[in-house]
Length: 486
Image (tube, rainbow, N blue to C red):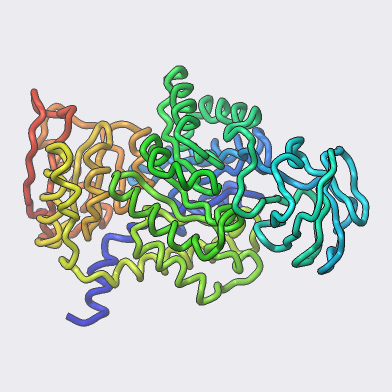
């Protein structure tokens, strides 16, 4: 088998690693959201650090309009909270900081001189210590703390640059003692409940208590929204296992993580978080700086291409674009690059070479064992998997065993369809189920055939399973291999 033949076989069913795109001024129009979706966007991210509810409402309405037009295409909505960010104040014009220069930060509001600016956090003076390193914009500039007064922190510039308004401040190795969910975040969370978003990405989660608090609130609202924790603070690392256990998934937010921790730790943490999420059968997103150069340039650096490929090889469910699509000059090209790199990287895995991790199976319920063997069967016969689900649970189990082919997940619930699009290898399709199982199977196969997802004469692995049976009086597990009549 030639390399090109192998690539065609693996890419026939499409890209399995999903793409999250941040919507902003460059992409908030109806035309651009449609183009992003057709180019490869699977999840639209609303960054609540920017914009207002009016602008985000417009994006939500456009995504819902897009979703209403298709049975086999869908865009999920992820609301990303601002979190407890520490920022410098407004400055009339950029202040040039030079190496060795003395510069101060004060908790007094409205201060902006050539050697002092305000910060928006009243406990800033208490949180930093003499000898700490302050990072501006994730390390674009750095300053060493030399002394403190009751209301100011006096520093010496280590690495200079232009200080502009509202720049993000970190202390190397420390997190601010602010609540993970601020008053503004709660307002935005309520906005998400009202609009039935699919996911929350919660910023600067330090412990599992925050996740439990948010989930309790969502239950009180009868809101079916999944909680993705953003791992981006130094304080989260000692509590990583309990945070991930409490969550519905994770985002490796490498920007702030690399500011609060030594940058050489970030690749190791990324791999560790992906591995932990995979073992817990929870989705994981790799984010920040993936195609940063494409904010201003039409082609990526070769290192950025390798970065995407590494995240795909490590097993991320999704990779994310931030400024590249929010305010970049080449948002569609950035999505296209991410799509093609992920697809090509996935195609480099030889067919049938990957056996699901058996160590996961024995410790879990019957459904896991069933998904494990369904994956082995599909890999051995080189067939796509078709699963019928009302809760999404079996599709998610199959996703985390990483079959080589696509998982076509038919569901009669639009919310489940939207949620499943985040998971690796899952193509969710909306279809009403009839009372006759065979009739439903026939309609599903005909749909896939008409859409070109399968061809006549192909075999498919058809999965029936679940704690909430669709056509059975009790839960049973059943795998069939069927040949499609063309």
